[in-house]
Length: 119
Length: 108
Image (tube, rainbow over all chains, first blue to last red; front, side):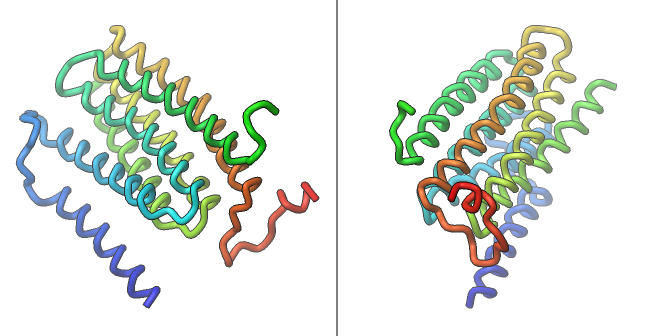
């Protein structure tokens, strides 16, 4: 039963990757470049992996780790969005998000030790 | 020429990001998940930002991307270390297949 679940998950991930790479999905954002659109879809797939781990993580530390990884992925989102639109302020949003994510992850990690914040 | 090298860096970064998040989803344990994902995602996002710098050139957007690489390389290992230390101190068990636990032996 456990091995069956393993193979079902592997088949779902490979199916989603094949669908993104080879099926012509219509561009939602109206970009001209097909390569950047496929890159953005792959980043969305990685973000959905983070959200799955955030939803079904068994302990609290798993959820915090998923939040950490997703906060770094936002930087990649903003960097990819900055190329075809030609605007510079997307990277500012990425820097601000990464700073806030770093501070909040530090606070949550100290809180998980069970000693309080003033050591 | 710059755009071709930028596309190569962007593809490498996408590969690292995807496999890092795959490791976050499919490994059995919090320590394994952090070990697999934080290094891959850090290198992948740095590579995507360097590709953005190659696309933009020496304008303020590109320089901000370079600064962001330095900031990311400084902060991501610190947050991962604090997370794994807090998880071990709050009593999260290792998975069944793990061989030894040196951190618990040192803190007896």
